[in-house]
Image 1 (spheres, rainbow, N blue to C red):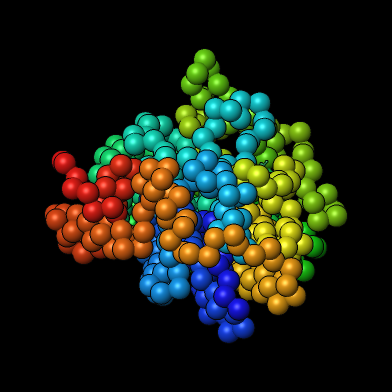
Image 2 (tube, rainbow, N blue to C red):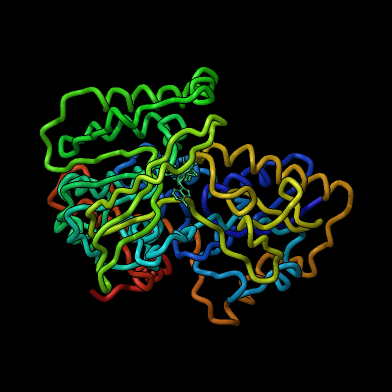
Length: 448
Ligand code: NAP
């Protein structure tokens, strides 16, 4: 039996799901992969920090999937605006939504509206055309709320020099802002203890590889209750985190221009503001309450900082025409099945947790359900059989969609821009402007 499936979102989640579908042996499955941006790869291109080439390297395996003949990329299309889910149902037997989580959870403390969401800064430094081109980095002391890997990314980029990042793919506008960065002290705040931090040890250790960063942890913040000690025994990664933090706490300070303090047991309670300017962050000291949780001690500290970022988790956005759980910020589903013919995978299914690798098993769970429904005859067959029908619709609407062949052109332009740099060894320099990306991808000459 031949099936046509629309997968919406060309990040790792959507590409892994597409791969499983086109490799299925029970059905002949063809996938159209819809993407809002003119370029594919989602979180890898626009979420992973530029100084993480190993993780960015996942693009190579995703690239191999997109090279496969049964998969067709249709980029620069916003499902819900350019075409609705209802309309897609006429062209496909099933739809898989993998739109991820790109918005920031809000910081709901007094003054929290003055804090900058991590996603905004990531969008800027990763050259996402939807975000700012210039970034104000005049603050000498900066706070980062949240001790997860996104918090680490933000703190690390703020504590590195622009020149250290010049070997990466960062575009000129990002280098220009980062090279004016005035930050001398970056303070990360965890509201619980070191054993409750969400970092992964590799990322935590990596901070120390930069000659420009002196990582400092106060010995007073190294504290474990009974539950933390038990957790360390049963979780190797968590135990390694604690060991690295203990090392940071006891060693001699490193001579470096930027100090990155990692504080624990400090719950942010207010962003202190004078007019429109941030003048500090107030935290309340926490202590273990004997049950594994923490409780406020009533002891407050005002940290003199001029900028506050919050990296307290991302959230997904609703997709027009599909139910959404506004509490959990996910599309509600049973293990990935919303209804026969409509499925979800990745962060829009399970929330913004887990590493990129976790997305593979998630995609398997979802695509197995889709294939079971197909075998059970539960899918409503598509109305239009001809694969060019959807392209005809897009063209009739004058939507300047991009394709996989187009990605090769854009990729080539970015690589050539990288080669043209004075710094040797740059693999690429990212193109930021939306129109310019579309023009490269569609093969229309770019007037510079
Ligand atoms: P995360 O791992 O869930 O960390 C969120 C942090 O924010 C936690 O420390 C949490 O503390 C804190 N937090 C939440 N609400 C708060 C509040 N109201 N006030 C103060 N603190 C608050 O989320 P993430 O850092 O966004 O990362 C998302 C996923 O992407 C993770 O799986 C991560 O590993 C992955 N990732 C990986 C990399 C990499 O380089 N490998 C890079 C980026 C992201 P509590 O625990 O106390 O709630």
